[in-house]
Image (cartoon, rainbow, N blue to C red; front, side, top):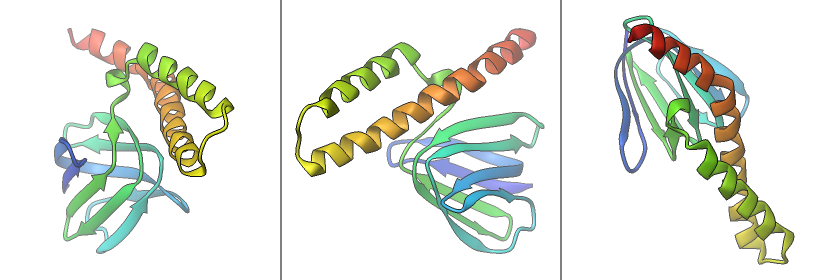
Length: 144
């Protein structure tokens, strides 16, 4: 097992032991397992998945960050991360439309770049929600 902490500047997302983790990096997906050699990875925008000590699989839509692995301890510092069931699809789709309308107008390069970056995160959230939310609902309805 790997002692793991996943956090953003505003909150701790997960703390516990995991069996395995798959992270999106700029060079593709990387799998992390117990007794992994010490390393630092850059995390890219994408889906991160891990299996906790109970064998449950978790998915997070994550933005950029940094992963440090050493001696069966792992720290993930990410700009943002959200579980599929936490995504408010109506709100995020509205924000997507607002940003797309905003980008049709002529804006400063800095503001356009910032908005395109946010749009990338929004599209990831929508894709993650659509891909995984049905599985989450099915799994939790069995537990009740």
